[in-house]
Image 1 (cartoon, one colour):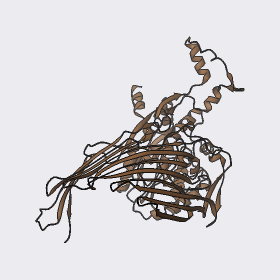
Image 2 (image 1 turned 30 degrees about the vertical axis):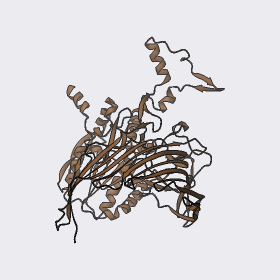
Image 3 (image 1 turned 180 degrees about the horizontal axis):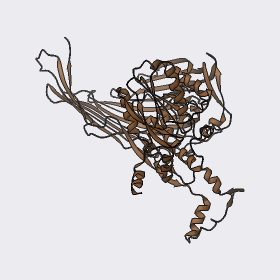
Image 4 (image 1 turned 90 degrees about the vertical axis):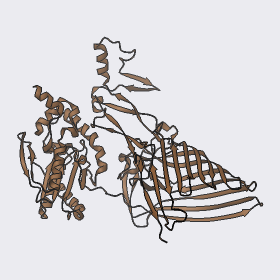
Length: 83
Length: 548
């Protein structure tokens, strides 16, 4: 998802603490970490910072955002076709 | 679709808000691709110009996949879930800084709907991050305590037929540090706003001391060789409380020790029983009745959140309870072929939680059935040796379903003025007095809410209403198990047997719990779910053998 993020230091220190919590899982061959919360709660920023820290520790990380996966609901698809 | 288009979709119909507006199956496919080292192409939206592109997803070399999104907890195969516990009202500043959405009442409505959908996801989280970016405890802290008890007792025979047993115990319980213990304002209802502090205690510092006496007395009177009567009374102090909202013991149950807010539970129990042997001990029968009075029983506020709640005291209520019942038991102890027993228990148990300065009442302060009480309980066990080698056994259980609180209706909330306009527009005459803006009662003047005040509440939404607490019951529990055992031939050297039991022959889908869930997150659409465990007929075959 391409957007400008304003990152304050709180997020990097949070990501650091999350990294501590994840330490004993990082040796797993394939690890999937989910970040959930309400809109505006800081999911994107936390995910971004956590990804950066993981990459800094030489991990190959892929970062996916649910915001890229919005679809038209069935009702809207029908309306669109009608138009 | 790109973000602005998605916003347009939401404007068309609020019902579009929820997991259904996200292509979760595609996201799940991408998770599976990651697990199987398969590179693929993924979507990418651009907020600035509301466009939609694609990007390569290089899963083959990746060892970590980070996924963020509101509905992420619905996906499978997540190893670790972080939940950021900041609701849309608290996150207003964040959203203004980010400038992603346009700020209008509609957006706030969308966020309110999302809020109700995802609140339940919190329980799936491995880590919860609070509003100050701090990680909340993953495991509720271990509580330390000391327990001392002194007991004296004496048994004596008053006559040849009358035995007396009596005693007295004294117990002391101390909740001690290390740890942080919540302190609330005195004489106010416990909630987040009345929390003063989470006060730290050092190792072995006493947080709370509870103590009490445990007297007991029982008497047994032997009427003759085959009949006897026994009566008893005892008082028990209990300092550990089980917090659970399911019938079966589960790993999610919480055991909470008495603390500043939770006094010890005190139980007075009275029992009387009559036992009779028949036909020189071939049959045995008994009737036992009991009555219990409980002080300081723990119950929960409506919609309590018990799991990983650091302010768990705010979810608990202290009340009183009473219970009584009788058990009828008949057993064929000995017999050539047929043995077994049959029992019936009738039991009642109630609770009452009144309002106090520290808590609100439950069920309007009215008495209600306890969470686990099953009034009628019937059990039947039979073993029949059909031949020298074949024996048959049956096991039947019937129990009334446990009490439950059901939603039984729904209120639609309207703005007073809108209703008034509607009545006028449709030539309907408002009720006499409907035109008034205020009314007086007990010397107080009460005002109807105006438009703006109601808008702040739940304008346009409906809200469920519930039956009185535990006034309904889940379906009855009925189960029949049958089994046949084939023993070795009498003269055989083998010491092995075959066993063929069938569990739940009737195939009943016995319900352990019923719960209601909003299927779309919208508050006017709820579905009923029944939780059944081992709901099918389960035959099995066992071969037993013994080494000589």
